[in-house]
Image 1: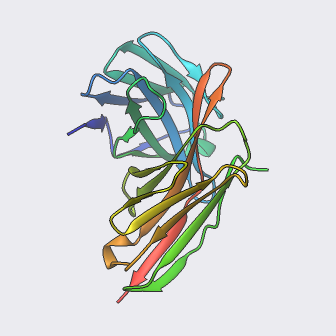
Image 2: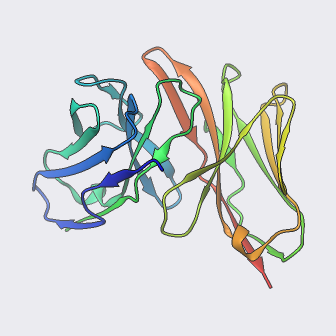
Image 3: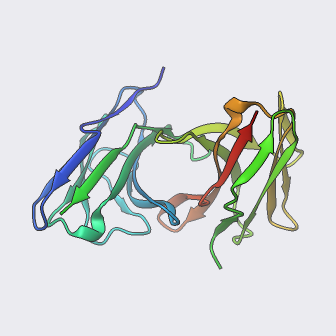
Length: 113
Length: 112
């Protein structure tokens, strides 16, 4: 079974804090993704990565950065958290062929106060 | 116009009913299509791919109409366990790679 794990299920941070969200997959997938999911807005792509040390901006990259130093790990960084970044963050991974299935982690519910 | 549009519902149907969800997409160059299912407070999971010729998986049938840029999902003999949000997903190539565009989802509640 493919396993995508995220470092926290729930996280509460203060405005201005630096926040790290970690994602690890165990299926040797080349592609990894970070999404946020908000009521009424659906899933929106923040960043994605095709390979180690490679990253591409998604639809809403502002206020976020990412790091992929190892194939199995993809980190999302909020340099200075703001209240409008309160959301559910979902990590996903897939094989290189784009049409293949994306496997999602359980999500991190981040609240910024 | 949104890239992927779905009727948000909710669809409330009795057990045993047949229900259909529709989805439209705006980019005629889109290449692959999927339906994902998301249970309450859970992550999305692939339900089925959608092929040009239409495809069936048990009680689920997916159809694609490229001319109308329209995708559908039909669920026959609904079960209580089918209650979930169904996400229409469209794969589209971009200059810097590709994108999976998710619809906002259609909520289904199957009642006894």
